[in-house]
Image (cartoon, rainbow, N blue to C red; front, side):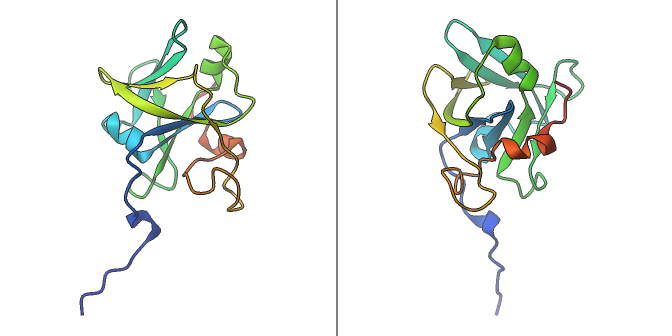
Length: 151
């Protein structure tokens, strides 16, 4: 018999790309959002203050203002990708008092998140309970692990 081992990572991707702004400024994106960008190793952070839209554009990791993307649990197996955004949110005065998940869209190669929308409040999935438990979102208590760029 040719058995195949089923792992949790074999569950199909959620079709909808999501980005979560976590309490202390870490940004997480699901695998669908990361795939829309072309699975980059780094992004530049963009903001349209008038429309309150945050954007991510794939760039080479050598670009001076690039922000590294960290795959949680290793890139091959990861369904969550993290970007340090603390300085970005502080500079633009964007509230991060609650972790919120937003649907994302792609426009001209930029992954866009409309921060004028309320988003969905998410909580930690560390104990297997709460709104974020089945979404692949991590709360701010993982922020120290995800911060790879100085803020």
